[in-house]
Image 1 (tube, one colour):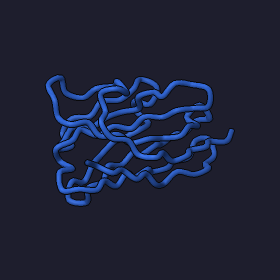
Image 2: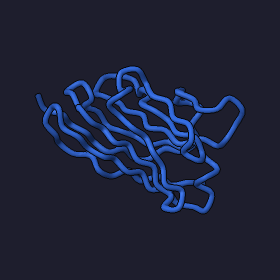
Image 3: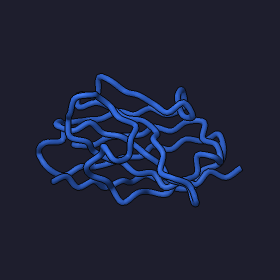
Image 4: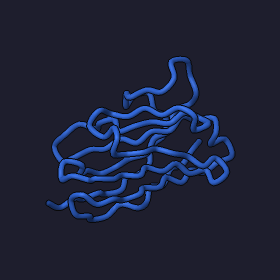
Length: 126
């Protein structure tokens, strides 16, 4: 069992930056690939990016590539999402998620993640 707690959300002006954190419980954090998703009002939850178990591989959605960076610190059981050049369309609740290691590597699919945090609100004003 893994419990995930996000933090770092807030209100920021367009062009600004935020860093989200996701703290995980348990001693097996490095047994999971980690991802960030987001969900805007009235929209489906969408993939933002993911990082593999040791931080060596990352993948991003096209809409955030070059602006967002995912990293993890296994010693601190924490995954981060650095968000730069934020735009109003980035406004959403951001969720971190954990997936047990499996064949196929990093996945952008919601149903392939086993544990979820409660989410943190990010609002970008124009």
